[in-house]
Length: 505
Image 1 (cartoon, rainbow, N blue to C red):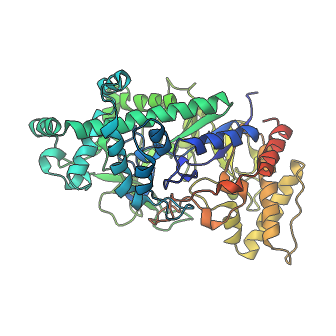
Image 2: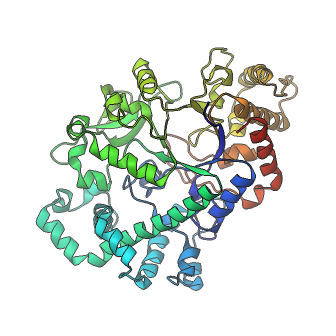
Image 3: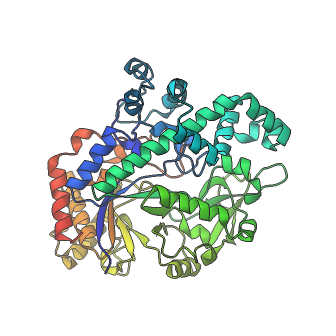
């Protein structure tokens, strides 16, 4: 039997910071210290890529680059690249409980450019980093975006959209310093990230990263490698990504990402994907792949459609992409519309699957999300970044739904020796909701699942104000929640540590 681990899901952006967004600095190390004291062996983060339209880390301008927003300002001050006064002038923390992405957009790049102006560009490590060319396409792409007033790729001058070799070469010649700046952001990002990861690993904490299946239409990959995507001659997508209508959405979800040209990718043995996965496993200890079902079959919606009601399922690469990667530390996000093809892909790869406890207690004893129905090869969550917090989830239920949930939860708790009694109709208080939350967490810990990962919001018992994302919506609250450092009390760590010991994690 493999080791059993427990961990916390918390995006880097949600860390406290005086500069408007969480980063790789002292507060990240403090959170690692909390994880260590609480017996937690995994820190799961959301994608660290540059955010795109709607501030979503799942719609990025580059699949392999790091977000400049996550570079820690205090570390740059310690290096002599910024002054405290400059950092103060560019603060973006009107509300410490929220990330202000608009303010970051206008201020953070300007501040980093000040740091770059003082950076030693003859540093041998930096020169070696630049010489590798790994982030050159990204850097040219971002310089072109800036030159086009940050407009999306489809609004650029046609000669740049089409990558006219003479035009791009002339642009590169005239913008060498700006291109070098964007390479500096990647150099500093990975320097700080590697230091944080070493700190976590030295404390016995592994990092689980998150890989979106798709990239944005407005991305360095689509610009530099259009042949890898299903695009027409003008570079417009033929079909776009989404998921069909289901119980949660009568219109489905129209994501709009360009779809991969899997036939072209198959010709070189999926080299682009293999490189992307290797890079991710070089950054993280474990990688969760979002929307894993898309490797079996993906849902294609005609470009320009107003919703995802009309679409078709198309075969993906299936097992052929993973046959030489079966021992890689990958977690498959297998939520959503599943069929026998997906189940076969999961069996043949052997990657751990995901189980969501918010979906478990509907009165069906055969419900696959019930802990008593798990095998060990899975990761159990109360919910994900796309779900309501557990307290919000209960609050939004009607009385009958809550009654079924509590009754079913009580039956499951009994199987694992967890104390929880379904309340009477007269007792539907917030106190009972918190009791149900604690019972749910204990059951997750005692379940057969190899990993139990709890969103920090559910560890703290917070409500809808702390929800990370509401799928299918664009709004200032999505991706912006940040936790209050004072909420991580010693008693929270002690309670988690007690459960890890009791459940042999």
